[in-house]
Length: 205
Image (cartoon, rainbow, N blue to C red; front, side, top):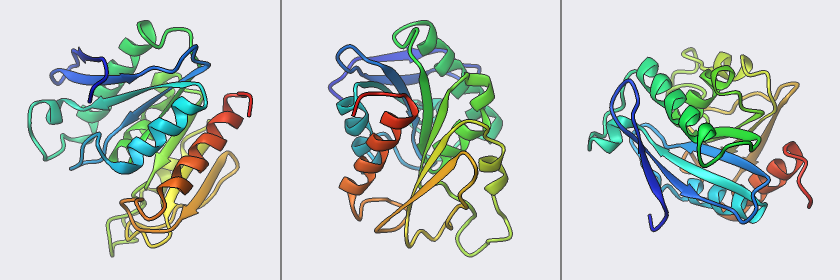
């Protein structure tokens, strides 16, 4: 990745955080990857660059199963426990004293939503939130979004087969061209992320 990284012990093996520090940061953003993908996903890269341009330091987190070389994701409770351990480590170290936004793409967004109360985050960023499995709208995960009580941004592809989440009192949904990969208009993804982070963290425009 060409950036500082640190291994973090979790209850389910070592995770790895890749740090992309901003100069004199005014906030921090911790992002997780999708179930079968890694940190090189183009929407994660776009969000990272957008955050840093707004003066927000970013940590990209690899779950223990990915660090161990596996592609099949761990059970949700293991993902959540590992994520909480990494965020606590970052908050005690390189991201100390910064207002924290958590998030991720797809499955990583679900983890961030489920654990927001445990991480003390002030907001959640969801890239391509998988509302339901393709073709199975009855298996909705909308309640995971609805349970979040802090400001939330969902950036969703207009033709995402995993569905379109509903907006809510503290939740904005920005639709961009493309599908679940969010690569149809990466500039739109970056603009949405930067504008929302600037607003939610009270940063200068």
